[in-house]
Amino acid sequence: MAWTKQQKSVALASFLGWTLDAFDFFLMVFVLKDIAKAFDVEITSVTIAIMLTLALRPLGALIFGRLADRFGRRPVLMANILLFSVLDLASGFATSLTMLLVLRCLFGVAMGGEWGVGSALTMESIPAKSRGIMSGILQAGYPAGYLLASGVFGLLHDTIGWRGMFVIGIAPALVVLFIRRNVPESPTWQRGAGKPRPSIVAVFAREWKLALYGIVLMTAFNFFSHGTQDMYPTFLTVQHKLSAHMVGLLAATSAIGAIIGGIVFGALSERIGRRKAIAIAALLALPVLPLWAFSTGSLALGIGAFLMQISVQGAWGVIPAHLNELSPGEVRATFPGLIYQLGNFLACANATLQAGIAANHGGDYGYAMALVAGIVAIVISVLIMFGPERRGTQMQMTESASQGETDTPRFVASPATH
Image (cartoon, rainbow, N blue to C red; front, side, top):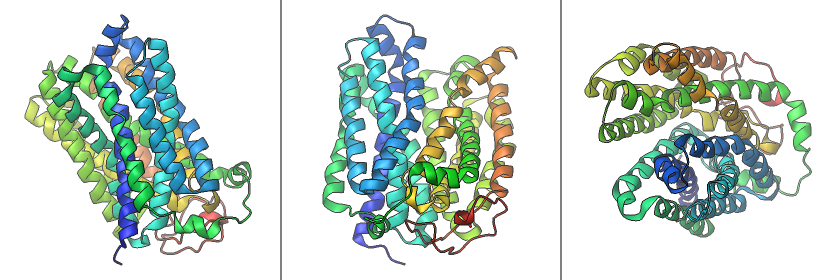
């Protein structure tokens, strides 16, 4: 089915929203040393800002998701993008570390809301047969944001400094103008507007099995992504003694692999099913582990990084479509984002965990990363095959939504999930 101009605008806006959200987040990662020097503190004190941003994301998913379920996806998405852009700009004018930490807490709330609202708007607006490929494109926005941040850092940092980097973070606000002019409201939300709906507490009480399953699954997923990303620069600089330039090059290589993996497996999920595509992508990490974690030489490490992120983000690329299809219609802007961000919160100890494992094994970060990545790859492949799937389901605002194309689910949550 051909896409309309409005559907293309929705897809572009949602992709840009998540890309630029990630861009604003990763700007912080590149200037930790500068901020520490400016406020005369240790780098570890500044890294608290990243932890606080991640910890506050579930709250944002709940707040903005609930607002989008009540008032519509489009206006809340615009408010969400405008808020995280302004907070990034404000970070550049922080006069103390305490002020910066407060701003990054608020940024975490704003960041946590964007994914759920944007993915709901997209999946409810595009043709059902296009959800797989669009899911991969949407999720590819995260590594694309990293690439964009690294490019801005490399080209402009020496000229504008860390404060100037955050000032550039206001740029995503321009997407709001595009949304206001070109993006319509979700037709699914419009059909259900004004109709009585149960409270979010009632929906989650009814769907507690599905919610619990989703949180466990997304915890494993976040360990998969963070387990292959958080300590990777440390692994390259400390264990392999690579230069900053080479570390940046390898990071960019891994990001390109992530974008390719997300799009390829997202599209594949439309043919073979969401669960099978995720399981295959996750298991592909196992044969890549030796090359990725235990090889020597920049070329071998680069190939390993590229292939590993094809696996990791290949599995992730199916998630926007999969979670939105599983979600109860009444809380579709809330449920996927909250489940995702709660999993992210539960996995936020990954860096500390891997650092501890490495310390107990003679500083072998490769072993620590391989151990975590290998375990969660298997866990994801098992969990996903015993879970439900509603590929191609008709998206409605009530639990009476028709089934559409689906594989028979093995996990029983409630009639709404089948």
